Image (cartoon, rainbow, N blue to C red; front, side, top):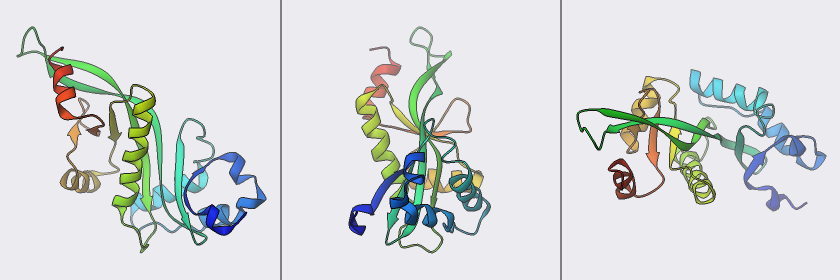
Amino acid sequence: MVKDEKSGWIRWRPEIAKTAVWDDLAEAIDQFEPPCNKAGEDGAAWLKEHSLRDFPLTATWVLFHNSVVHGFFAMSSNAFSVSSPSPANPEELVKEKWPCSQIKWLCRRNKGKFIGRTFFDQAVFTAYRVAQLQGNVALVIEPFDDEIAGILTKRYDFFRTAEQGQLWIPLYPEEEFQMHARGE
């Protein structure tokens, strides 16, 4: 296999990890250096120790180029709770479960050439592709801590879920969500 064919977004999964052709990817994952903070360290530990065990429940995508893992994100399908006013009584809130794609982990390489937005944007793109194939309507993330929640809400137009721990963005235009909330 030509080196260039092994660059880009690659789904990290057991059959790749067992193939000698991908030894350089496995080595790059073992050497992945996250940002020097608790979230980065926990993300790297998950990638190295748990990502293959979580397959196929979680899809892990790594950005691999020049024998280096520049970052990754891991996603799964889920459901999240939203609250909206009842069509019959606007004073009453109705809680619903909506299907979603959920980011479980997202991490970039320490001092790498790619910013965190690169990995987030690819996760959004992946969630949108999934939404075209099944009924997922949003992308959900549960921030690692309050600092990361602040960064995410400052950079993106996230909503809070009914549980208040998760953040979500719609994968469809806002007017489609408003029509659903009104029962149309």
